Length: 396
Image 1 (cartoon, rainbow, N blue to C red):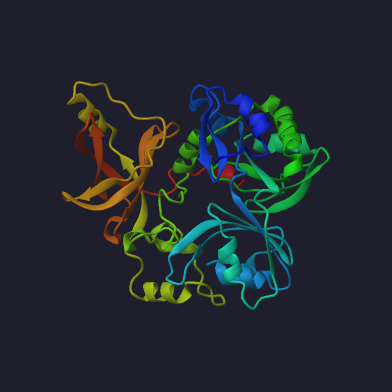
Image 2 (cartoon, one colour):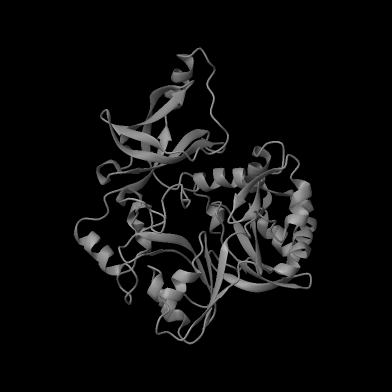
């Protein structure tokens, strides 16, 4: 049975159509407004508040906290300075990705770890022989993503302090009203934005303060449908959509190495031993992973032609389609598109796809299956650089 997040007393009255979905046992709003395009526009043109409390959150602390983090993640944790944040995958012993998330260094011996799936057992299993404490904080800590070009203005108005010096993937403590919070320059939108980590008991007060401070900047709540569009534009992967956790994989096809989902750059062999290292070294020596994540731009005129053949006007869903569809080259299937949809800002149909290495070069022509009125067809697709949308203000 799903329950409301700490923000539910505020978000529930705003969800006018009562469109909810389940996220890790919580109610998550699909959309607040009549359509999610207004929420998408808030993220890209003003500021939006997104309830991301269902993320799993852990605090890793103690003399060997750094050693545990370095043992589990593929990045070099010794380079994670206090006040910094790493985005990283972590793997099983076969070098296949268990999950991806963020690790925040709070002080010399304390880290906040976020994940899409439960990780408490995995972290404790890998802490054998280490002097470290791993505490589940998922219910004790609420989280809001404040995203969009005006997000800094809203945050500064709510806290009464400047955040111009908080760089990309950095964090620091702050206060909103009388509530102590932690603010990280992170997000899942590919835009300027922050994530605010809040003690559960102060969640409603922080929501009210951010909404009040954001009135002058057009802030509004945004749901999962709008978030899905912006994360696709940013080329960001989603667990159990663009890849399957090694924990849930039922066959070899469902197992993904970091290099197969665009995270190969986050694997460091210039560090201490970590879970999956031997398998990933063997993979690298063999020429790399068998699949690669690519971005595709779909041919709108081909889409239009399939609808015209059925006597219908062209149409494309404003929501991201998460159902996998075949990708073809020279008439045969070579991979699959995992997320595809329409980008309002790029005015293009785009997709994330998994294909063999010989098809990953920019400009490679491919085709994607497209169904109209139950009739399967194919539309042209071209491999393009990821992310589809790369906003300078995200890092500025």
